[in-house]
Image 1 (tube, chains in turn purple, green):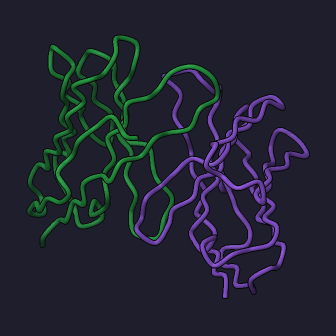
Image 2 (cartoon, rainbow over the protein chains, first blue to last red; image 1 turned 90 degrees about the vertical axis):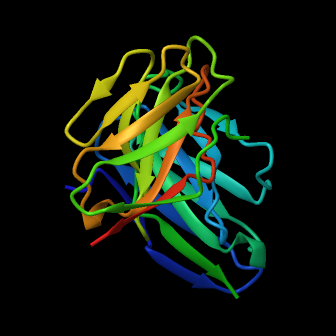
Image 3 (spheres, rainbow over the protein chains, first blue to last red; image 1 turned 90 degrees about the horizontal axis):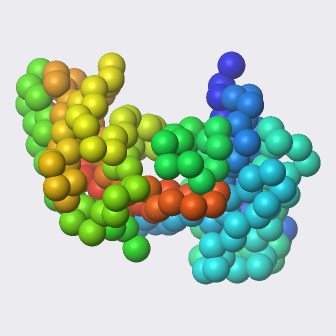
Length: 115
Length: 111
């Protein structure tokens, strides 16, 4: 009965490949997010997605694209992977995006290693 | 950029209260103070949040100064499982925005 789940937990791939990370939440939340935690442990927001509205962090390369088939899922597609994409990617969800009293619930993370 | 300042690390003896400070001198009137923590190799976990008043839940207490320029997270009886990086976050309002994490405080509970 995991609230926010991600697959796979580990992903090792070669430079130039295209890969996807899946995220599912069973909390009935309206808003979902993707965060990136780099090797220096800095956590940064990449995207938030609320009722089909996508808010993109302007520093995220367009090789990264979130796709939401329904409200419970927000997948992350990455094209032409680069060495610098190696990081841990966290999915999160919250009940109502943009309301200051909302809390976010995080998944366990996906460790991506690009060789 | 994060709008908060926290000490990079702290130690606390097991069973004692852990008091984690946070400075947010530029906080605006409608911004809340949130605390999250990240235990090694796990996703961040929500702890507590507040606006003006002190708050308490089953995990911790949050003390916010009257001028709201700083706050303290209190773990009343720290255990080894509380060893983690603790993030103080001022929530930026408007839209479905994400959390802005700073460097946090690495709290180490000593046996």
